[in-house]
Amino acid sequence: MLRQAKVAFEKSGYEVQSIRITTQPFTEYIGGRSTAEALNFFKILDDLSKKESFLLNIGRLTLPDPSDTATVELLSQILATTRANASVAVAGEDGVHWNAIRAAAQLMKYVEDHSPNGAYNFDFAAVAMVPPNVPFFPASNHDGAGHQFSVGWEAGAFVTDVLAGANGDVQVARELLSRGLEHQARVVDAIATQVEKDSGWTYMGLDPTPAPNADSSIGEQSSRATVAVVMIPIGRKRFVGLPPQHESPEVA
Image (cartoon, rainbow, N blue to C red):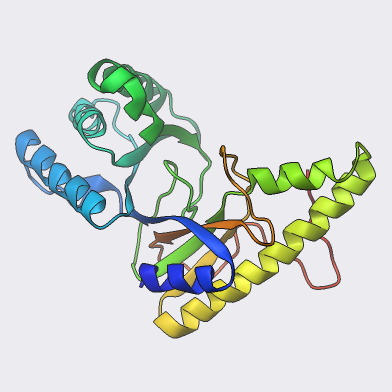
């Protein structure tokens, strides 16, 4: 299904940077496996992601129990030996989770010491107030049903180009950026909505965050979209609600 979505975006002139799959929190499906069995399982899953050319996220870890050191140690080893992405929630509506902050620091230090040049830390994030559905890694997470997908942009160069065209005029830059982002959002949203109709999967929304990268762009001819599957048991929504046709989106 994701490969079909990739084709749909490419037919409309967008370059699809990557296909991404986020599982439910890994603690929900490792069962009673021993550490060795769990590590072997995630090695197999990691190999599958490389073979099938998708990025993998094994979900978000929450730590209601301060003594849950075994799970933290397991996640540390998974991240140090695979390219799976994951995150630890360090704060929520109920406030700061100090035990999770300590666990995240411990995990980062382990991955620093046990992965090549500590680089696998790029696959991990300590997150706060990140809702389900977001397609961006490593913070992407969900806790429910499957057959759902979301779309994220990589629009850093697009924003740079728009600002360059404003010649230093802040008001002009705001208007150009607002107009450009709204146009691209409506085009991408229409493609994703058609993918939803064709596939039967539920389109969970568009995240138009202009994530930067060395060669990122959502320009007219050289556009980038990131197609990600995020499996959430909630109704359809937009991450940043697309405004009615007569309004312009607020751009910070």
